[in-house]
Length: 87
Picture (cartoon, rainbow, N blue to C red):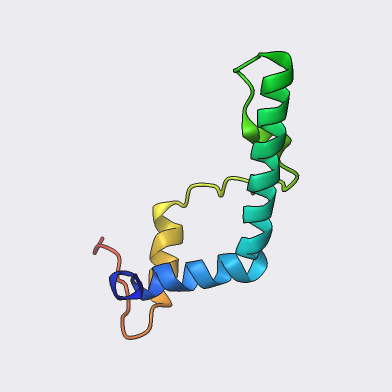
């Protein structure tokens, strides 16, 4: 698996799971699924989503980056300098 990941993907993976350990997400998903199944069995309503029973809050969507933001981020990449088009 690691051989198929880029350094950027690996860094993002490490940062995400350093802030949010996988075991907490797994435990929350298991209990949310269990609660959803119990409510579905007792009420007979199959439109219930397991995410409704999750205790962990969902991360806010990151705003889309503009071209200028991406060019600025690219300037910081080791070994390269990004240049804009000549005016």
